[in-house]
Length: 588
Image (cartoon, rainbow, N blue to C red):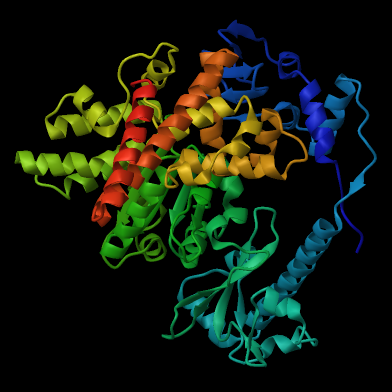
């Protein structure tokens, strides 16, 4: 198989440097000056008040209404319906550049892509084998009929059956010793022996968004354990990035503008049979940021549907925690808990589609589920209980990046805790007052993040080369902005030259960090700080991080105890250095 040709990154980098996105978008959308940016009516959805902005400084567009965003290449693809290559050719012709002859991938890239293609073909062949075996297995057919599954739906989802045989796949793969079977997770190799991973199970193929078979989930027909067995992590399959049924559900999700997240494969299949085609399931793992980001790109509403037992509520709370940093103001998240002993499969078969959709319509909103869960952890009738409630609520409030939602939840929590809104903002660490350069007030007006990492993210986007010099050990790694900084750092270090912001957007498309990075870019673009002000902001943020590191060091020394005179002298010297740095930094 030959290598796959690609357009060199260096050419795309040069192209995006030469193209002016204002000129590109301005051909199709009337734009007016709005501060440092330009604005107009969004071409991607109907609106009467402009929510579509274009940043000349960052060379990207973003709609606050429908969340469409991207660089000049992305705009021509989204608005003009062009393919990726055609969009690049169109932009190149606008600025008089010649698209270079197709360049082959590096030998390593070509080898990896070829291997992935080979593995997909193996998985496709295995799926066809399992489907053929289902037709020859009365026991498996009766099981599916007993679950109420129709043949047309089983065919749509590619459902099959793995024989109760240690090496059944040998019939489909005469070269049973082929290492590809192990790489795909179809065969287990143990102490020189090989055997099929899936035996006597109904097989649910897992498809990528592009429709390629990348994994399987197998369900026992009887009472064996585990009830569900998934493919292991492979070069094709990563559980935390994939959703069962997404390939089949994507059109229905776009049409309904809603995605329903359930727990089991049979739930997805049963709901599709009852014409609720917008359901997907996680793959034996908790909801991840990648899952949420993937669904937010195609849906305006995400509803999590779980069992009402302790395990279901725990899974729902985990989904809430993952969703908080990602939920935008204009989209909705809801939570549905089914009656005891019910799951979506059994409920819709017993009560029908209208009753199930009524449950979805009455879904508890994210804010209600969050505040209700926090209230359940404290007694609000006493000052001590209210203090505990506020303490528990603080880290959750800090995770919310949607400005209006954050403000609403802050107000509710303040009322329950019987303190003022400003007291609660102080408690959760929001800045008050105005610095000379103004960013603090601006950030507070958006109820945005107030960490040193957030300040770095905002200000480094205009000079990406500086990202390489950030010491990861200074960052608080559980913050989304820290993870975004490291993602940018990886791209910059892998590039042959310092990338531009449009190239960064191109490289991070589909990443769980892209929304936060675009939010930071919007803020910094509207601030329109000069080069010296940006340099001072970066210096201050790095100073805060260094101060925090020194504080941790001092705390660690105290925790060990100061026994010798030498230790006490060393501690005093470090403390004096800490206080000097603290005094040099501006107060916020």
